[in-house]
Amino acid sequence: MAMFDWIRRRLTGEALSTQFISDEEDRLAGLGLRDTLDAHAAWKGRLKAILDGTSTEKVDVGTVAQDSVCKLGKWLYGDGRRLYGKLPEYEAVREMHERFHLCAGNVLMQHNAGKHEAALRELNGAFSIESDRVQLGLVRLYATAKTR
Image (cartoon, helix red, strand yellow):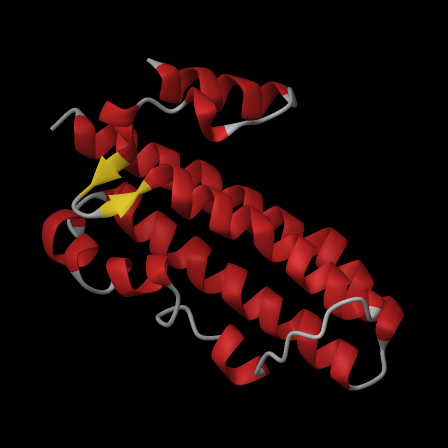
C-alpha cells in the first residue's frame, strides 16, 4: 500500500520520499524501485550543476541520450522486456524513458553550444515533464506487475 501513498503524494504535489515504498514493493526482477526513482530524480540536479558550472562531472551527450546505458535502460532491454514486455505499462515506460534520455541529451547539447537559456528552458520544461512521466510510469509498471 505504501507505493500507492507515494503515487497519491506525487499526483497531489505533496513532498515525495521513496521511504513510502515498502521493501516488499521495492524489487521487481532485480530492479529496485527506490534506487531507480532516486537515480532518475537526481538527473535534474546533475544537469543543473553542469549548466551552473558547479559540476566537474564530464558527460558525453551521445551516451546520456541513449536509453539503454543506465541501470533502468539495461533492465528495460533485458529482464524487464523478457518478463514484462507484453504489458502496456512496460512499453509506456520504455517510451517515456527513451524521451527522458533524449531530453537530457538535448539539455547538454544546448549547453555545449553555448545556448544556456535554451538549455535551462529544456531542463525546466520538457526534461522535467519526461522525468515525472518516467517515475509515474515505473510505479504503474511495478503495481501492475506485482498484481499478476
